[in-house]
Every structure is written in C-alpha cells, then in structure tokens.
Image: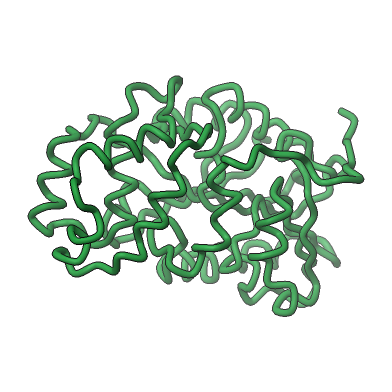
Length: 286
C-alpha cells in the first residue's frame, strides 16, 4: 500500500466541533479526557511493554494530540509522532515544549503518512468515536496494521455503549437528582442513549437539540447542580455541527479488531462510567 504525505493541512468544515475544542480544552474533564487512572495504566502497563520491543530507536505514533499521552515518561530512545487532521488542534493543544523528542503533523488516519512496519507502538484516546462504523473503523484499522511492526503494540481507549441501551429518560432523571458525577459524564451518557444503532451513530447537533428541549434555562440549571455555567460552552459547540459520533459495544469492537489483532489486555477503570471507557491493548495476529 502506498503512503501519502500532505504538503498542506487537510481542510475540514468550520462546524466540526473538534476544531473548536482547543478554546474549551482546559475545562473538559474525565471521561472525555483521560483520567489519572487511565494514565497510570499506560505508564505501568504499556510503556514497559514498549521498552522491551527489540528496537534501538522506537517510534510511538499517537492518533490525535492528547497532551496527557504525549507527556508520558517515555523511554529516552522513543520518538513521538502525533497525527491529527486539525491544524487548530495541533497549534493549540500539542505540548511541543514538553515533548522534546516529538512532533505533530497534519494528516489523515485513513492514510497515515508513514512507511509500512515503522511504528513500535500506536496509542489513541477515544479516536474511533469520530469514525463511521464499520467502514471508517476498518479503514483506520487497516492503516494501523500496515504501519505497526510485527512485534508492535496498539493501545486504544474506547467510548463504548452498554450492551443494553440506556433509556434517555433515566439519564435526565438522574441528572436532575444530582446522581451524575460531572457534566462530561452526562454528555457521554446522553449521546449514547440517543444513538439508535452504531451504524447510524448520533449526530452531534441532535445531542445539543435534545439538551435544549429538555432544559429550559441551562445556565441556572447547572448552577443548581453546583456545576460551573462555563461548562455549557462544551455543549454549545455541538450546535449546527455536521459531525456524527459512533459508540459501538465491546462485542462490536471485537468484531472489527480481532480478525486482524489479538487482544492482550483490557483495562476498565473504576471511575464513574469507567465500564464504558476501557483501554484495550492489541498486537498483530501471528
């Protein structure tokens, strides 16, 4: 398979919410950003495995520019390359000064601009949520398998729907009862409850629309819950978005991945909703 390199940034429509995220990145919280539990798992379970891969110089590919992953205590012989399709995310989020052996480039995960068998490890956080199922998942997975060395390691955190869909009314009932830990947990549960099927996904604009229909005065409502009203900006970016999120079940992830990779470790964190946010380690099938 030929690889393609990009001399200019990939163009994306301005209403893609991830392009606006840098402005609100600092107020995002778990589980939309990796928690300390997720990072401890990577540090204690993943990094040692990468160290033992028999390469003098190692290349770690990051899908996206998640700064918490970029700034892990990497081995001094490991170089970091992050690939993200958004120049805005790269310019605003990538912690270049804290990653002296790393760089971020603009590119498409479906056409990773790296040679075959060039990566000792590939890591990502919630990346597949942005893809259509199953085609987008399969396209990116083919590229991951192409650039991953035979002994390499793939580490990916997923946002998974429960095997039995959650009732939308229950999500709002528990929100009003102050039984949901933070606004980001609520948004994830809301999005998953709205998804009719993983093949259809959930339009991001629909998440915002349902929120508006259910909550008459969002600012005062959040204040009643004891949450900062500035969190509303992380919901308002969904308005008029053309993006669609997909939340497969664990079985649907395995259906896509296991024909090509073997699952070596599956880690479920213990924080609220952690059962839907596992990190799974894969290696190529021998």
